[in-house]
Length: 166
Image (cartoon, rainbow, N blue to C red; front, side, top):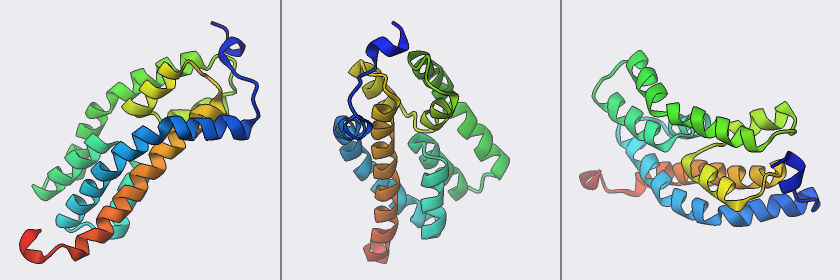
């Protein structure tokens, strides 16, 4: 399929909002898991800032949970980085597959969208049958904000958990 065949011609704002609507189930699913991550990261004495920064920069739930567990057991930075790379190798395959759907899209868009690829956003994006980059940006930004927002919420809620239950 040529890039222009699957691309809708609706205005960018409509494409973006449709992407957000399609991503709502992802966002709803991410929030409780991200809250749990935020609480767990604070339990191993990461600051709220470090906890949020991990979600902002890493944005890979399985890797983040693993990294926090490894930090708690005293693993070194290089070990955590290598384990994270191995766990996230699948994102290379997902990203390449998604980029194949975006033939004819400017490289800057492809680069930006590749940063938002998760298992769930990839599945929703590819199953939607749409390949408009603004639509995909709506999906990926919604998922990202849900993850980061949920992490922040969990990190903040940690202080309200009684010490005996931490």
